[in-house]
Length: 533
Image (cartoon, rainbow, N blue to C red; front, side, top):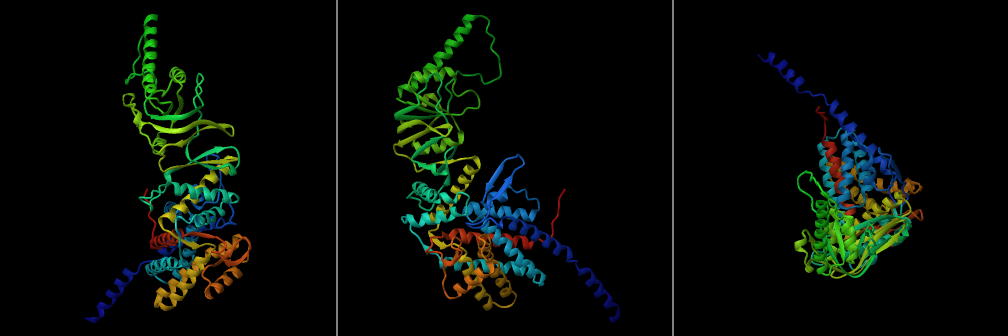
């Protein structure tokens, strides 16, 4: 009786044998694709990193050094590689800076994962160990960090200039860094010190001049001309400003219909009525003492007609028309006034007050500046200049990164050294920790530690130094207890980076490591791609 039972067992074994080849292939393909994306941005890491020139389908050219921008513009099709693009986006929203770093770390981790997988370690084991290692890494970084006070303007400027140094506009970092710091500090609300909304800082880009001419304006700047129809004013002192959302033009019917006018007297009556209607509105506006009107763009009909502009000019009211709908909130917050939606609600208490509203020529265009605002809200406006569109866009992106760095410091008030110092220190401490762990975990954590060395390695490589000697020397210095020893790219040697003022917020490093690990764990767990048609 025992004999027939044997083949049954064997058959169940053959059924339970699953071909793992495909799963390994899918993993391999995913990891290779994601690494290709990481290698594409690797050369743009650090102050000596190269810039990328991206030519879009519409023929537009973008020159940038910002990891998130590069990946955003790259048309990545492979699903796993898309995850790296998402990764740099999430780093951009969390920290704002370190978008290249996060992708490079993820690429290095994936490379180590391939080696571990080929040694026959199960993906779940690798994934769990990576998670443990990343939690430990965040603890190590937090222990290394130096607390910073918001009143300490110097430290804030140092970290902003570190962020700007790797950008195309790095030579202007002495100007842009203090500007970014002042802008963020002017919008921080003392009641809620840890919340900074970067939408309260408006960057107005204007062609002409050089980046040197970039300035922060205490007040408002419109990238528009004052309407000059029939001798409109271009300068107004002691301005009473109203932001209106209604139209100063003859009313139209709500439904599509045509009015047939049969004789001239009726036509004159229509024109006369229009005139009276507009004059009635303008008299009401003038009665409140308002002398500057900001008129919101209207979709339904013209916000202002030539006739109404003529009357407004006669009434000595300065007009800025076509204000974007999205800007209304920012404008009312800055001027400390309320938007007026109907002529009946035109009251004096809804207006804002400023010392001066004037039109200024900038480059080939003109802008409207409002300065000396009474009870100004917590906002800031930066007027960004550049000699051509490419430089201008890049200055805008770099400034955004610098603002984000300061925002990180406001949220989490700790600084950490830059220049590859934290990564090497992590690598060293995690390596030591791996020796304590048992079994496969120790093996995986050691790989994680090795992967982190990619940052100093790449920094050295991009600066044209010998990466192997530099990284070995760095390890040696850290083993002797110099926690803040990092690569000084300008001198091409290893120095104490904190003394060289190369600093970054703690949040940038910690979020880079946690996000990269999360992304890699996700890619590891995928064992098949199913395409749904």
